[in-house]
Image (cartoon, rainbow, N blue to C red):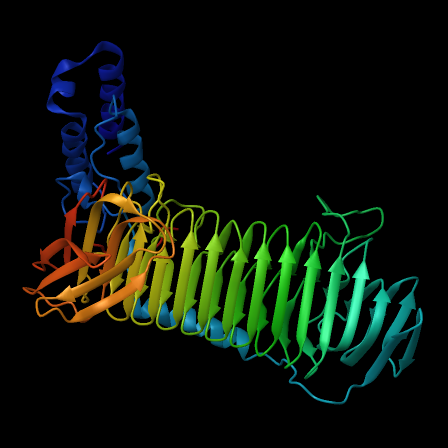
Length: 519
């Protein structure tokens, strides 16, 4: 196979440098397609014989602007080397794996809200009053050095540090106002599991004006703690109180392991990430209001949202992780780039993706609305995407598959990079690329052949494309799209994904499901 790949690349270079008219006249794509067919037969790939580059999940189809075969050959080689020997796994197995990961993390020995504490610390008139054990005051740093529950009240300029290796600690905030210009106000340096409980009815504040640390200060034995609330270990935030976190330079909440949130009301403002977890970020319930300069919520692994209300007012990207699982909740995202993004090291993340089982999701993005370098699976819920008008992004963007088996999807945006759900879906999709854009305030409606309204809304943003997936859409039925009560398209639904109008580079990928990545 290596020899044939090298031949392909060399021929591409030859065509570029010497003209190679026989290849150019036949078309670069035909040339590459033939080579891909040969390559696919000589690998152990779990792919059918490839006769057209469009059938490869993650490939972008013929490119009339390409002047030579070199880039396409390299792209094919990289794709097959990364995914050629992948073994497909079922979507059901993928969901089960993620659910098990969440269950394992959330079933740890975290503390629940209680009115009593082992130690009570009161900050008053610049003094620290302590009733109980396990706390040392070192300059302006309060160090917790043994397992137990600790309640904090009052105004404190300094730092609370937890240093209890392999032991559990509960921090109870009862109208605490803490700030620091020197270091992170709250740091979990060493512990097993840490619970931060916001006492019922309390209003708590964390303000961090300390500088972002490019690296740890080994001279001062200082941890690289780039979060106003920073934890090296698992952290669980609960309670029926509220916590406002404002950071001038750092991420607001940064957990090096799991970050779990239930019941709490969090108001976050940060020039970096709102919430960052290296492993799991879990939201079970509560109210989260986030304004962020980079990502609203980011994880290197998994974000799971089971419920609650999440509002991301500003962000570069709203939610970003290797996998995102949404089982419920009310989610509103505004982003300068992608609204929800599945990202990782590889361009095609076989075995990873965005899964929407329930919930109400409203995306307003200047980049892609739903963007997955892997797959998207939607089994329920309601999703509204007000995507970009710029032609270099789309309201939907995925590399492998977008399968819909339930729920309602409405995606508005541009036509330049318009992409529909996969034809493997069991819910039908109507996709319309309009001849021109329409402004904010435009009335949009879809009616059936009997003039019964299937959907209607007022545009929240300028748009030129309309993608609608819903179980009410039936094959061999006619539907009319109305713009300001005037019919602009009348469409007979003949396929699982029926597309009409201006479509740009529209792709309707059949999809292969989630797969197991090659090691």
